[in-house]
Length: 211
Image (cartoon, rainbow, N blue to C red; front, side, top):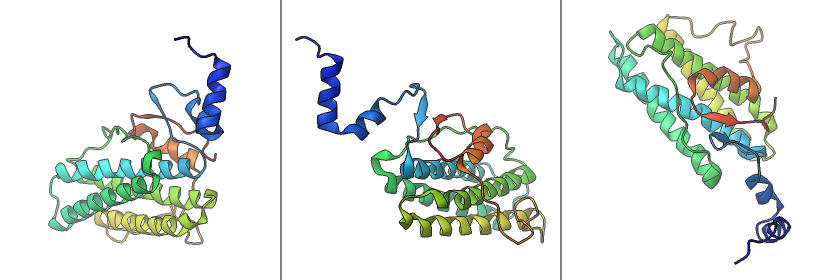
C-alpha cells in the first residue's frame, strides 16, 4: 500500500488528534531528552523532578546510615523518605499520563556515611524545594493548585529547619535562605533546574518553563 503524503498525514492527524496533540508529538526533542511539557503540566513535572530527587536522596540515606547516627536522626531520615514517596505519588497521580518517566539521579557528591555531608545536603535540597515552590506558585493557570503548593513549601521549610538544627543546634535558618523580612527565598523554575542539575543524570527539555 502506498505511503500517504506528508500533507495527507497532517490532515488526518489534525482531524483525529487535534492540533495540540500534533504539535506536542512533533516537538523536536532528542530521544535521550525528556520533554517536561508546557503550561501547568510543565510546572507540575518540574515539581515532580524536585520530589524525585529528594525521594532518591532520602531513600539512599535510609539505606546507608551515617556513622554515629542517633535513633532520632534515623527516624527523621526514614520519615522524610516516606513523605517523599507520598509526595512523588501525589504529583504522579495528578499528572496521570502526562507525568515524566522516573529520573536518574547522581548523588555521588553526597558522602552518605558522613553525618555532616548527609544533613547538609538534606538542608540544601529542602531549601531548594522551598524556593522552587515559592517561585512557581504564581505561574499556575489553574489556581486550584495554589493551596497544595503553599502547603508543600511550608512542610519543606520545617524540614529544612529540622535538618539544620540536628546538624548544629539553634541554627535552623540563615541569611542565605531567609531575607531581612523573615521570608524564604523564591526562585524561578529555570534557576532551580540549573541548581539541581549536578545531582541529576536525566537530561530535560524545560524550555517552556518560566525563566
